[in-house]
Length: 182
Image (tube, rainbow, N blue to C red; front, side, top):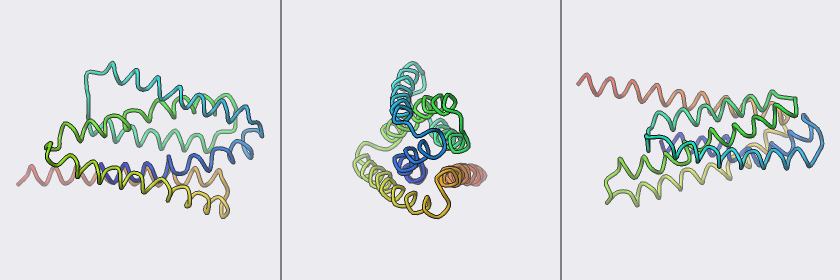
């Protein structure tokens, strides 16, 4: 979970602040209103997602966390190939909604599955790994945009996130099967 959250912050949240304003200017339409609406709909999506999550009976589930991160990568990929203002703004809403399970459940998962005496150390590692990805993502995306352009930066980095998290899910499943066999 620590690694997946680090990748998530590296390839989504660390990339988003750099690429979205440039993407809007180059691909959607050079309008501050579009950026304002995207940011507002993203925030609204996070609020809506939080309300939806509060209604669920499940309070933490690693599969939901992983699904949320992969789905977030897929939506980011679709943002990268979109060129319609309305569709782009609709994706902003979903971008916010789908991020919430990973945001909330990852912390709850630690609280529910890690002994209380170890939670301080685990939360410290969790936030250290997660927050390290953010500035690296900012620098990485800024560099890559200059090499391949904003559209391909979004597409490639979202694909890397999807593949990396999917690979970790597969490896975890194989490990669990081996553990059960012994």
